Image: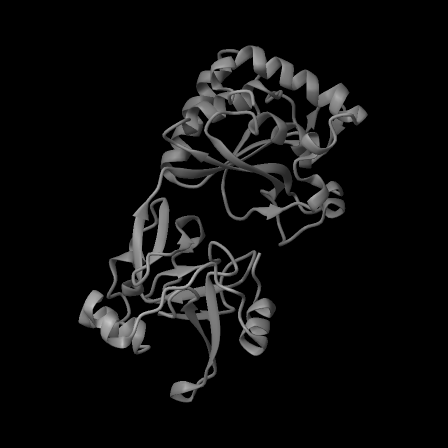
Length: 325
């Protein structure tokens, strides 16, 4: 995750190598850009606040540089800053944005530039939300919105090693990350979460393709592969960090969550106690927690706990599994 100190380092000591380069002369840019886009992106102009409709767009998708077409930001990192310009907490990767010191207009700011084509985008400030506390304040005209079928889902149901192993096998799932969410405080450690004091749960952050698997089917798999009727425990694991939880990102997901919880209740004699809560932040767990089962299949915990869950999952959701390699 990019942080303010990283940005200062880039601005002072040189920016990362770009993934590619697009170079054109001023006359060539004038041929492919309209007058206002050229003024903003090539002459470091600033559009009027609330001039862009992107300020109120939060649907899933990605935002490309309007000059060169490089994908720079994901809608997942977009938030309403109230500033009058589209705002993001993180770029898609650290090598996509270059940072320059800007001492114009009697201020000291950090200018953001497309690292592929040198288009002026806007500025970055350190008054954004957790966990990065960054606000990339970008001219809407410097961006182009591209729709995407990629979505994210954050859920917990006991030890994240188990949950991660199951969803890595699900067709349509592109990435699964283990981490912490649902509690208080930024960037907690495993030890802090295990103490119960943070209120965070062990969760997985899933990136999936909605054209291949639905939000509802992912919830059905989740509620079928752990026990959603036990409070703060799964098997031998005890503590609030092991609670069953679904973190929704919008009203549509909240409604779908209520619907699926009601549907799944018919399959359980005891009451489902899964927490349905608004998503706020996801904090990536330590590296040794990532892909734990895939890296340690011979470990006793993987053999005794994770493998039986995977066997059950394969039998119950055969049609939802990825093809064997």
